[in-house]
Amino acid sequence: MKKRILVTGGTGFIGSHTSVELIESGYDVVIVDNLSNSKADVIYGIEKITGIRPAFEQVDCTDLPALENVLRKYQPIEGIIHFAASKAVGESVKEPLKYYRNNTVSTINLLELMPQFGIKGFIFSSSCTVYGQPNTENLPVRETSPRQDAESPYGNTKKIDEDIITDFCKSGAPIQAILLRYFNPIGAHPTAIIGELPNGVPANLIPYLTQTAIGIRECLSVFGDDYNTPDGSCIRDYIYIVDLAKAHVAAMERILNGKSDKQVDIFNIGTGTGVSVLELIHTFEKCTGVKLNYKIVGRRAGDIEQVWGNVDKANKILGWHATHTLEDALSSAWKWQQKLRADGVM
Ligand code: UFG
Image 1: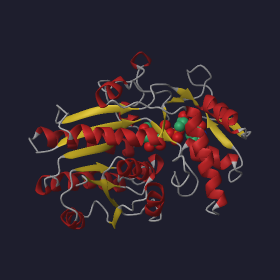
Image 2 (image 1 turned 60 degrees about the horizontal axis):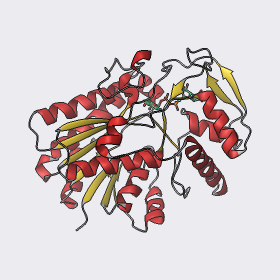
Image 3 (image 1 turned 180 degrees about the horizontal axis):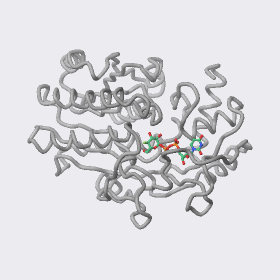
Image 4 (image 1 turned 90 degrees about the vertical axis):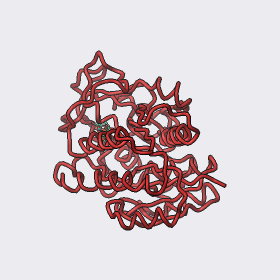
């Protein structure tokens, strides 16, 4: 019998790509999502790619009784991959309580229900945001690098969730957890059937860039060229979404195959390479042949100057590697943007 995995936030950007990889690795996938920032059509996209339609329940993970019904309906479930969360940094500053409620209550509810339903594995969607701005001598950051005060309520919820999961594991709960700290996920599935679909004006670099390239936005603003980096623009570790999705399968398999020797373990998931905003723009232009309209503007408040990850631990212990190049990721993002145009979505 196929092992069943619950994916919360499974119609979102990372959740949908992970659901595809789970199905293609032979898992039975149940998606729960409240559709607050995604569309139910994504389920059909996942089916189109894999040939299998995952079960779907429109449920908010902060609703404990509804979540309990889902776990009862689909038992036995072997593991949970928890993506469902509010994720807009700027909005979190304006509406902190929404973030603290959504992002912590959903985690608590899932953890609380796991022992009751005999669910063993928990993979949590964390972020390199927990490292804040590391000292230059600490770059690339390792899992053991110090966490720092969060720049936003959103970032703080990732730290708090990490602590909640760790404390629950330490209490002797019959579960194992893996915290995956992602760097910057970008790109879309190579089929261009699923991808990132931001609401309104994108806050993140890649959707803003591809929307500019296709003419929806007039000009991409580069937030600062006076940072202490080689070309003055900020540096990030951009990880291709399909590679990131595969890391979740590797992490879940480690727990389900009894290979994890820790109750809670942490892995950085990135490429191990830092790329500046200007380098990324030039790579996009080169690999797509599209000239991008951009201008340098002032710094964006709260931006980290530079961060990229040491990913040796994930390479060695999870046996996972990022195999796609930045060109692959940017080409896929461009193909996805063109597909949205062809479909009349935007
Ligand atoms: N940037 C621009 N112009 C834009 C948008 C972004 O120059 O229009 C720059 C930013 O200044 C930054 C880089 O592009 O240097 C990446 O910015 P993103 O907004 O795409 O990503 P961030 O690194 O700021 O944040 C992302 C996620 C957060 C998460 C964080 C760390 O959006 O949710 O990574 O994991 F917390």
